[in-house]
Structure formats: structure tokens, C-alpha cells
Image (cartoon, rainbow, N blue to C red; front, side):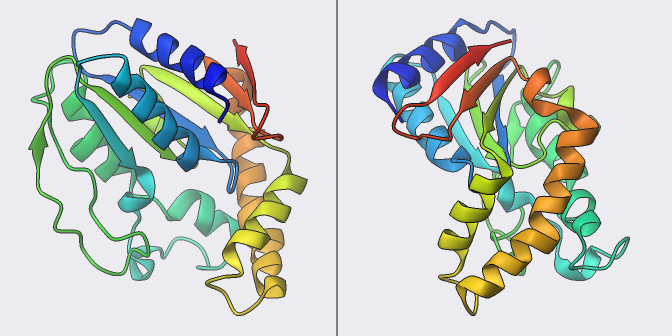
Amino acid sequence: MHTEALTELAEIVLAVERPHPVRVAIDGCSAAGKTTLADELADVVQARTDREIVRVGIDYFKRAPELRTAYPIESPESYYLGTWDHDAIRERLLLPLGPGGDRRYTAAIRDPGARALSETPVRTTAPDAVLVADGGFLQVPALDDCWDLRIYVYVSFDTVLRRGTARDQAWMDSAAAAEERYRNRYIPGERMYVDQIQPRSRAQIVVDNEDPANPMLTVN
């Protein structure tokens, strides 16, 4: 991301004051650029402070596929409502870093494919640490009250389809298979989230990432 935008975001993050670690959500749809932004932002924040920066990907908190039984596994509903273990995200990551928490957190419960349990150890943060977490659907009711700053990375669904297909064809059978999954599962699930939660309007910061070389920041 452009250096100027990252500097502005870092200043906003460091201006948030809490009597516990500051929990920053990098929210957005698939292929919006959440992980890249979170990685770069964590580095820029760390360069500007002596505070501890905790970098976590919420994709490491997925339920095992065999536990996603509420909806057909390939459905948009399963993707949106059944993929992530919100209880684990709250209890093992966000609440320990929040008010009255013991600051003992886990950064992962499974590998990104959710097949194997993670051996990530429990760690303890400093009282003034900053958590930078990226993932999808971070403003759902089960998680929303646990964030101290919400950054929403916006791209259109046309861009989600184009970028996601290009990215995911590497691990799927073909570009056509990747496109079908986006059209039939990922994008419909993300439309549900956008329609129900209105994350772009609820986030404190919106990063329009349609052009990654020239992102536009909006403070709500």
C-alpha cells in the first residue's frame, strides 16, 4: 500500500487509547487486500512505537469441515455463518486482550485449511500491546463488541471475482473452478454479510482498495 496511506493509518491506530491491548480489525471481502494491508500496517506501526505488535490471521480460527453441519458445506450460508469459530475467536483471542482480560491469548487453533489442530502456544501480551487481526466477517454481532478499531477494506464484487479467481486457481483445478466457487459460494455469502451488517458504514476507517497503488482512506 502507498506509504502515505499506511502512515495515516498507523497514526490512527496509535492514537487509540485503552487500559488494555488495542484490538484492531482489518475486515473486508475475499481478495480485497486485507492480509497485505494488515502485514504492512503492523510493520509501519512497529516502526513508530516500542509497543508490542501482535499480528493474527483470523483464518487460523476456522471450524473443522466436519463440524460445519448447520448448512450444506458448499452453500453461501455455510461459508458466512459456519466457517469461523466465533466462540474461539472471542474466548481465546479477543476477550483475554480486552477489559479485565489476563492478556493470555492464542493466535491460532487450526491450520488455514482447518484440517489439523495448531500447536501455537499460549502467549501473554504487554498491557499496551496492539493486536492487528485480519479476516472476513469481523463485524458480525458475535465479534463486533470486541474490537477497539475497525478498518474495512472495500473492493467491488466484480473485483473480488477477478482477483479471487486469479489467486485461487493456483490451488483449485482451474480458473473456471475458482470462478464458480466465487460466484456460487463466496460472493453470495459475502453479499449476505454486507447487506445484513453494513460493515463499510460501521467501520471507523474505510480503505477503498480498488486501486492498490492509490488507496483512498475515509474516516467515518
